[in-house]
Length: 162
Image (tube, rainbow, N blue to C red; front, side):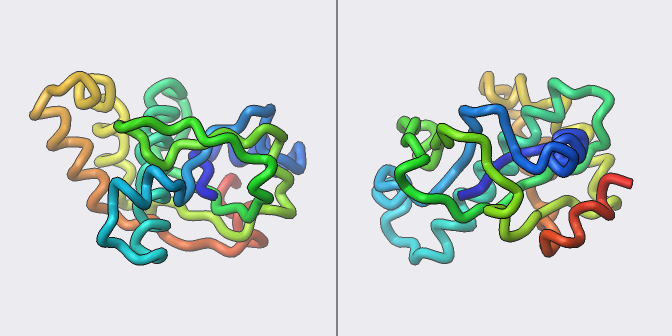
């Protein structure tokens, strides 16, 4: 399960001990994602779900104009019974977690490098136009998505918000 976030939301989660309130938006390898990306193995499907969460993080950054311009995706291991599939053709991996996600269930964080911030800032500004079909805006968003997210162990996440 991949949960989109921002550094500001991560700071709040670290204080609260959970990501929430419920329902919590997430992305996972769902039956629809398997069907949509039929040729991929599990690792590729998980990467697609993580990139969908990274795109959702861009949308959060668009709304949070004061947040530092780094996409954040939290990987969590959750019981299927806590997850409701909410996907469609355009978001085949979209799910909702029906309870707040305990930080104990978060297994890693994935965050942009500081050097990606200018591109992420431009992509966060362009995401509404990209979603609306603007090709120039889509180019900006796709360019930002060329930055790979860095992996962080859960005990390292607190150092990102300081």
